[in-house]
Image (cartoon, rainbow, N blue to C red):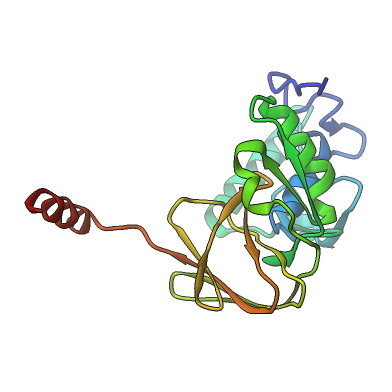
Length: 239
């Protein structure tokens, strides 16, 4: 059973904030694994943070650092005075880098199928445990297009297009290209110009299975306009 985090506790409780160092424990507030899975490379914060795998890139000058949870009246006056000044003049921030993040597109190394009736917490935990190894975690009802796929895809480049993304790949044996973008039914996937399925995986990724020899995989966002739907309905009615 997956333990559920209690979000009702005070933000300065001991498991979120160290009163001695005045540093927030980021990994007790969010899952760094899920951030990395979602292609998040840097974390920007107005407050100091720490967590395993989180590396400091830059910090504000000492005179701009707010600190947190002032205790005495003089500390409170200094704290809120700084906040007022920074609200007016702007302020520097803390910048942190995550150890490892998944790229915008990559080749899947395998697939894990989760029952449709499995709780969302269990599904999210499976994603957090396995997606960084470039596995696809997929619901049973969505898994058929990925059946029998091999781990034979290497992505050489990824480019943004007007309506989506285009990945250039090496897929001598075929496999699955995973785009690090949320799934929507309006994604139209093609492999060397031929239509192919787009599958929701890892909660926030879109997977495209490709046959051997494919060199270019594209995702294009194609959402019909209302007038197009009305015209289509009118034609169907007239026929």
